[in-house]
Image 1 (tube, rainbow, N blue to C red):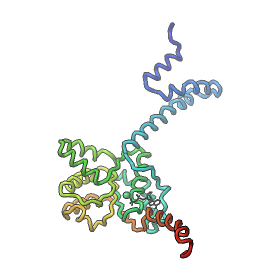
Image 2: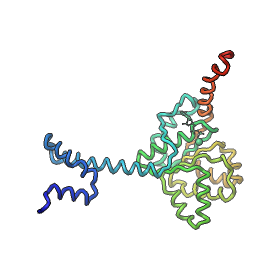
Image 3: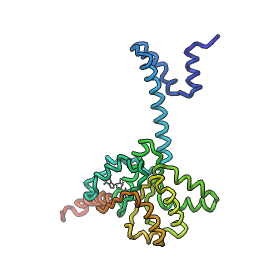
Amino acid sequence: MTDTIYQQLREHLHHLKLTAVADQLAPALEHAERERPGYTQFLHDLLTHEVTAVEQRRLQGRLRFAKLPARKTLEQFDFSAQPNLDRRIVADLATLRFIEEKANLLLIGPPGVGKTMLATALGHRAVEAGYRVYYTTAADLVARTAKAAIEGRWATTMRFWNGPQLLIVDELGYLPLAADAASHFFQVISRRYEHGSIVLTTNRHIADWGAIFDDTTVAAAILDRLLHHATVLSINGDSYRMRAHRDAIASLRPAITGGEFS
Ligand code: ADP
Ligand code: MG
């Protein structure tokens, strides 16, 4: 018995790996029987299923690759908690023009002010817009690079750090970097210079970077490349983390003190 044209069509779809079209074929045909769309419309609607499915798969792939620590969005960011932060600058960054321009962003401030949140929210936005993004901490970046150097994978690792269109380097400065680590860090930064964007967060003001790298020459060389095309946002407000704790403590206080002092 020869295959019906419907069976052949299904085989074609599987052969071409058009799985979303294959899944939607029966309902799409039923719908077409009823609604009688034009040929072009029918084909368009059917292929749209495949395009959506492919885009969704790629988005999930980019998201997995990016290793972003948490799902944070810019809409969740409470600007009233950071009155000195210019929301127009953040809105401009959110257009992701800086990635097109291969420019950088430095987020400087004490712990808890939302540096990681802003960095990851921009990262998510970039992933959704189709950019390759990768998140790492500075400590992890230098540890992996040092390991790669020892294991003879230096070139591969450098290519890896150079791959994403946006590299997020979180928490520079919490630990000082030894001379080797500083030099590795410098090489990652200088290879990405004018090639791909970096969003870097740090608790140290630029003037103190000599202390992170234990070497003012390396610090100056790194800053030179980072700052050439960069937005620098200093966030100096109160810690949002501490604020939440303060509110929690404050709400407990009447119970603790019996309201005596309130
Ligand atoms: P940092 O990286 O500067 O130490 P985080 O980004 O980790 O700070 O922020 C600490 C916590 O407080 C996170 O859960 C973050 O989502 C939240 N947070 C910080 N600032 C804000 C803000 N302005 N609006 C909403 N949540 C915030
Ligand atoms: Mg952080």
